[in-house]
Length: 360
Image 1: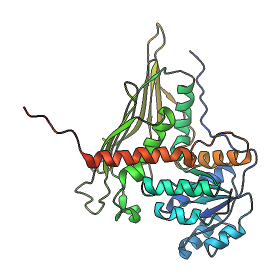
Image 2 (image 1 turned 180 degrees about the vertical axis):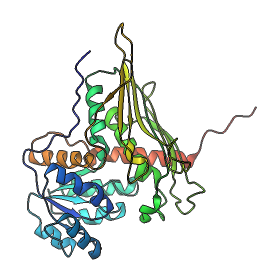
Image 3 (image 1 turned 90 degrees about the vertical axis):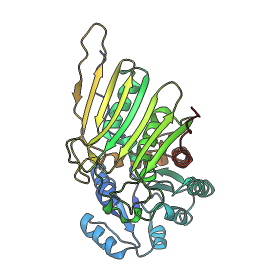
Image 4 (image 1 turned 120 degrees about the vertical axis):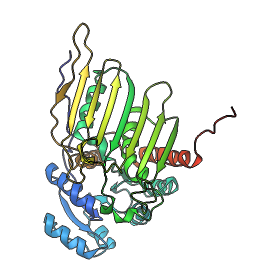
């Protein structure tokens, strides 16, 4: 059997660029800044429309500078700075119009509130020649990097089946801005899994989907449960199944990513979704079908998790591309709009409904 020891970490830039933050909300506190601290990236300053939140961020993370306005943040940014934009999807386009031409920007997902907004964002990025990427960071979680390395080396053979299953009790009250939105679960949560699957399999031919609200969260009209089938023909079969209203204790909660191939399988527990925001330990298990030998599930030790380590990868890949160290930008806006198109198809499928039964 080939030596295992898969790569688990994102490749860091040889010359990291300074970072200027636009938006200093919870995701920045929980993931962006902890990730940048681990990687040794330098955040030179930040701006938020909420002055109290900005002051709290400065105190918590020792931020060198808080800007009084978006214009000040842009004017004071070093020429080589990456703008790290973490604002609601509806505010992205307006900010991008103010970013100087040919600058690097990392945009927190989603790429706008719908495909029309995503097209507008893409158009602005093209017109302003921005080096722009969307922060689809799950692609860079250590357990995903390890799985990609194993799959890329052919260790589990041709992919036949991919499944992401989430059954948990999500504390939606932590994100008050979601409650009035018409689209929530797929656009803000399952989009991670849709994008991740696209990174392995490409854009699907079509999508079958249904997204639903739940009686336990009647004020969250944008859905808390979803089923998404991404159609790649005969293989692989791809399912994304989520239920964020499983309020029956921790014992039966689930959060896993599974890959099945012709020569083996990988199953990963993504513990972040369980008992969020504290989470549960991740677990990486695999099985390889060796000729003439017994097949047994084994465990691989993984260093780091989705939060915060995955956020190193999206920023590092953008820096390396902007520096000329890499010829590819995995989560570029040019690629990310295909994820948004897949999400749009899922909502259209959900609204369209299933095939009526024929007359008996």
